[in-house]
Image (cartoon, rainbow, N blue to C red):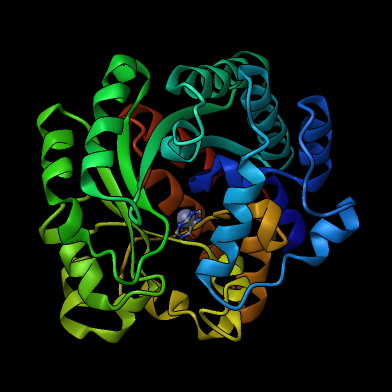
Length: 334
Ligand code: HPA
Ligand code: ZN
């Protein structure tokens, strides 16, 4: 099964580039920029990666991102992820980044997006990985700040596919961002939102109905609401589930508690993703393997998850079909 998963072509749809910041690279860049981290070593930093909830993680994740200053730093961060993605047979990736984490520290929007995009361009030419870029608004900040960020992002509209919503969920409901999401839609972008990670099923309803999102990030709490499950089945709005993230942030005690198997049986468009792999103990293949083990999945279940990753992506239909054919071929020959 592990070999089947390793070599399987996959799309990743829920990945925060700041969450791929490995401690070794963080120390290297911190040193380069003359910044002192509060931990003295890579080992000490890794020891701090024990989270009781989303907020404890976010505090450490935002602190780590503070060492990113120059365009080269954002390039190096993204390039390191792409190399890992390539090793794990990710052939298409839709990357989130948090502009406000950087602009609030005086780093220019262009420094961030140019560094990331240059690496994505090299990922395409050197490794054949296709990608989409999805800035996320930080939901713990106010909507005005999101609107300012959106207006700045418009300069880069040619390289942006859509916008998302992340950070501290509970207490920052989708309704808070209805206006900015309307602006985003009016300018022709796609939208996604984190919902139903720690927040209730109602946050998922609101992301669907108030923000008109094309995908829900996490969305596992949909399992609590039968009407919502029916809605997700009917509309085929995908969920980008991140099993190791949910485990590390103690949203569940065991992967087997996640509604992944049930949702597949209910014909919900579930996908598997890594969220913040440097912090949660695994990239995409480790997530697939954890799920395969927890649910005793066979190869056709895993194939279905990989097919979903392409079907739920923002690739065009030609590219989707190309990968679906390749996947079927891979499965038949394995
Ligand atoms: N949830 C909310 N915000 C985030 C996450 C997450 O899992 N990862 C990075 N920012
Ligand atoms: Zn996330």
